[in-house]
Image (cartoon, rainbow, N blue to C red; front, side, top):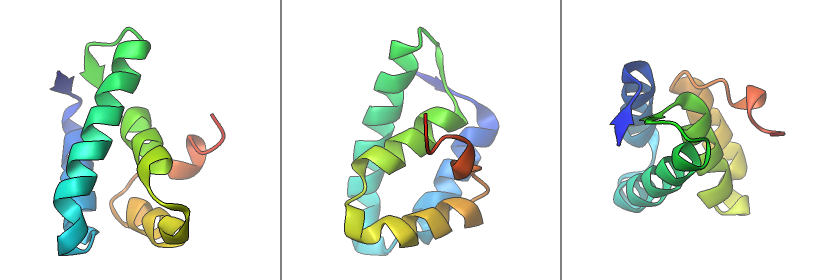
Length: 84
C-alpha cells in the first residue's frame, strides 16, 4: 500500500526515537495496523491518522506517556486522533 509522503517521513522519525530493541516490532505491528485502518476507510494510501491510531492501539499502556511524547517529537498531531 502507498504512503502519504509526509506521513512516511514522520513514521521513520518516530521509529528512530523508539528504543532500538522495540523498533522492528513497532514497525511491523503499527504498519500492519495502519494498513488495515486505511483499507477499512477504503483508502489507497496510509495517512497520519492511520499511523497514530496504529501506535495508540498497539502500544502497551505502561509505555503510553513515552509513546505520546515520541509521537509529538516526530511531528504527529496525536491529540487530533486520540478520541476517534
